Image 1: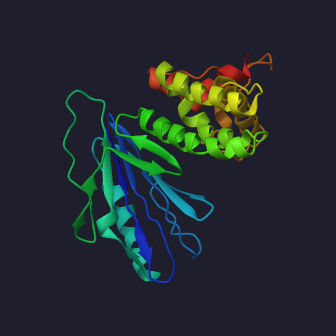
Image 2: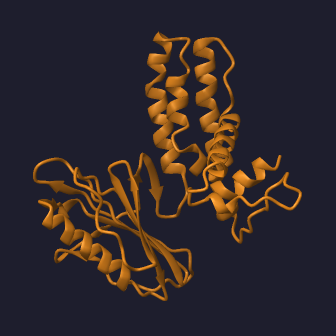
Image 3: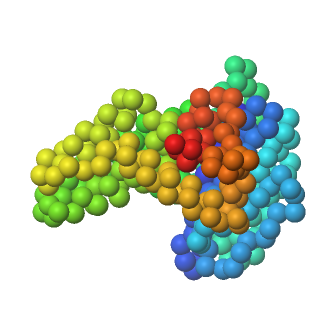
Length: 269
């Protein structure tokens, strides 16, 4: 089971966003607290090994592991973040706090709702994270629908700038390495139709959405293998031959279609 808590807060002096995500999966889970955007320096680091804080630009993400329904470390981290916000003149907006649960078990347990500053967060089925829409069933149709609508709105500008297809590709390729591998055939066809419409407007051939995905996966994988400090660097392990990478074991199709297994496969072809 996965729980995601998304909370938007307001800085008394400047705007701030505070997102919290909980992710239990079977007996072990990922907990993500995302997007604490603040002008101050780093938030406090977690002392529990099952909870990690990641920083992206001015956004901070907390990733925690829940085992056997034990959320104590996660809840403690949320309390510390709330305390830190209070100490740094930040006021959390409890009315904009939501929680999303993802659970693929047949009989999921009922976890107690999370409360922040004595307020219970409401449940949602989707939320936006770093420009992508994540849904409760971890399917990407809502995200793809959003991207297609945005790309169609930019077709007008493409008609004015006929030799600039980047204004469409930049939209369709938003986080494409994350979601395209798990996209359904129907969704991929819908994306490709948008590319074909752009081709008719500019009167030239464009790379297919599949080719764009492959090129970006390979580029991203190449950057990761060249950066030993990247958290996913160790997932790319060369075989004794030194020419191919060791394939990643995936139990589910969802995992197999995710970035790292797909990246290893493409790097070996």
